[in-house]
Image 1 (tube, rainbow, N blue to C red):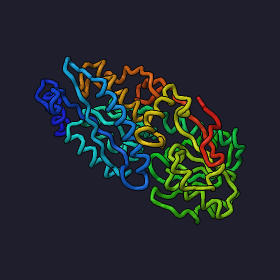
Image 2: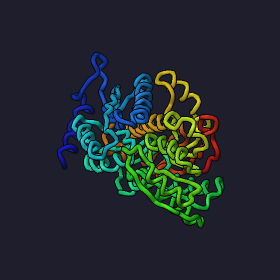
Image 3: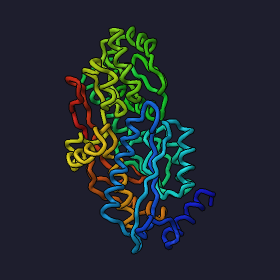
Image 4: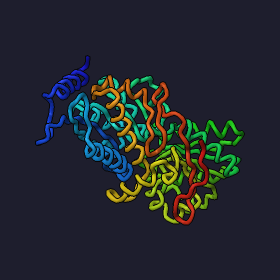
Amino acid sequence: MNAHKWFASMLLVGILTGCGQKGDDTGETVIRIGSVSPLTGPQTHIGKDNENGARLAVDEINAKGLVLAGKPVRLELLAEDDQAEPKTATIVADKLLDAGVVAVIGHLNSGTTIPASKRYHDAGIPQISPSATAVAYTAQGFANAFRVMANDAQQGQALGRFAVHGLGAKKVAIIDDRTAYGQGLADEFERAVRAAGVEVVAREFTSDKATDFAAILTNIKGKGAQLVFFGGMDPQGGPMARQMKRLGLNATLVGGDGMQTINFLKLAGADAEGVVASSPGLPLEAMPGGKAFKAKFEARYGPIQVYAPYAYDAVYVLVEAMKRANSAAPAKVVAALRQTDYQGVTGPLRFDAKGDTLGGAVTVYGVKNGAWSVLEVIQ
């Protein structure tokens, strides 16, 4: 047994035998859960959205009261910042394990989720990502790894189908930011459009720190692309939309959930008009608990960015597994997570053998009059 796994096991034994950390004057057992996302840097708005979704769920559960093994339990959320950097993600994972967390909600980005997942696997604690969509995350075969939204294979296929049948594209260019998320989504999109007979006239790449895309876009303009697909996040997508217009590149910009945000609209300004992007899951207003969640979340935290409902559901899925196991022991919770059948805010949640959510809709949006509007829901 490695040091992290031993430490977590010993802490958990103490907690469940009444010798662990207590609430101040309540006699409650404290169970620590990690939440990881970028809380500094250009993706802060999305990272804080994840944390707030998880924190809202934790606060609700604590207010209602939770009992495991006959003892009152209080959840404590430890939020950490991985800065959307893979190396930082593993450092943060080790920090959470040293703090004795029994589960982790996160990470946000696929590029941080994947390296951190090895740490959590070695320690034997469950990890539920509300937003990492790369196929590679659950393809590792880790029994403790789960996600509560559709993956990039589903999203890339949906976007490819819409590019062909919804936008009539015959020639496309593809750009990705070289992250696990951006490249993975771009690969799936490319696979889908090529299968439909679409010509890929350029495959370019940038980074998740870049803001100048003039050289790439000028090259694409010369190749007659009718559509530019970008696999990446809104800090790059917004400037890219502006630069396309400035260069006179008459092509539709298409992206995934990393672009389908309020922040993208701010960054792109008037040049956001006509941009298309997808997001795994149903539109918020069509989610079974979407309207109620929106009201209580926004009253406390302000506008939802994108993933908050999924982070909220991830916490509830975890706690429902604890209830079925009547324990916070990680091995028991992992086994109980495999039996998940939960009606969440985002819809029904069940996991396949890999830890992917079964089913899962993908919604395609377009910017119209400065706001995201639903174009198609693909089940």
